Image (cartoon, rainbow, N blue to C red):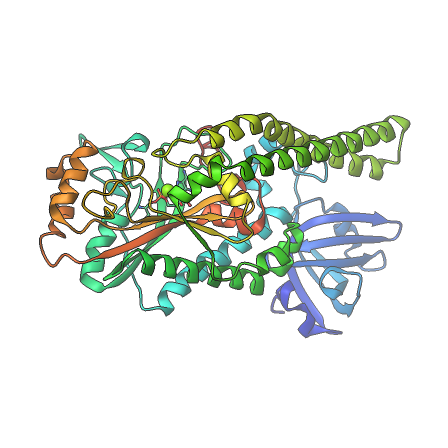
Length: 498
Ligand code: 4AD
Ligand code: MG
């Protein structure tokens, strides 16, 4: 018999089907075994009663065993998906000799990350990977439907793409080259050939920062548009973010609910987004209003911390008093999660005074730091475009606003709720002399970039684009604290295993 996918189960009410997958959960109650089967498309509750011939096989199954189940589909409102399977035949594919390392117990994040290859099978990572898939597909569809051509840019590159401090060197037949930091410079060449183009691929930054937002290997989607000025770039970015958010809301409600994400909040992500200049951002950071806001946040967080500490104490007391085995497991898990939240909150509270001070004493000219972005993005309920940064704070290729101007025609998009920058983009410098001067000011030898400089010699035009970081977008839309959960196998300063 052909295998049925669990997601299609409602088409087979009262019929006999065959499903295959892994034992996600198992419970034995006297003469019946309950199995939650996962096949990658959904979960299915399966009931195996002792009168069937293969009941003994079912007894042997342990967590994450692989199995084929034949049975009759029946309506069951309390089951996930509204149906369950009354099993008539159990065929084991592989019964594990050792217990699966990831159980219902509470595991710390290091343990989970070291077992990422197995952790991926849990409900939460599965949900996140589904949302990630939707986001990637939505980005591609957006560009494909709007007349962009996909251009695959190289991963091995001879020079700096974005900044010299975070290059990953690679030996290339006796010569030092680098893993790409961005496809942009190559994409600009393609924009002058095809008009509207985009690239999508892995990018690399040797970031020595251990933050919740930084990976050393991350995926970026970058459009580049001929005959575009900064406002055109911003308009495309806004349309794209609305398109992605809508798609996630349409396709992934189930996953968002599992991840405890606030759906109403995401429904508010509508154009127009806020738009401020860097100078206005600096004013906001230094304002009385921000000071008040931050102090209120500090109070709120302290209150939350006290609540969580009390909850943890209560659970500890319950555990000491003695509880049933199943309840003990549940309580221990809750306690572990609470303790992790408490550590996070303590760290946030501890950092706040420093962040307040940094914001209040912010000096015009520096790039916005992570904590500055967090403040601006916490103060807004929709994404915020911040434009026109000082040229010293940004990459060499950005267009100078005017001849004697201190700022460039660039834009960063800050996601709300403290997520910070998810997009960086700009109009590009299209004037040959200004570009060469900017390269020299950034200690880059224009001779090393003669191919890039050529674009300003032959049919130079105003053009621009941006890069959207996939992982930060997934973290924001899923409401995750850290980007490490947004990519199947994260690479950070401290992790390259598994
Ligand atoms: O702002 P960035 O550095 O911009 C560029 O690379 C431009 N060349 C893009 C362009 O104009 N075509 O990076 C763009 C985005 C950031 O906004 C962020 O979302 C993500 O890439 N990003 C990172 N994500 C995770 N970890 C890191 N270390 C990241 N660095 C940048
Ligand atoms: Mg940036």
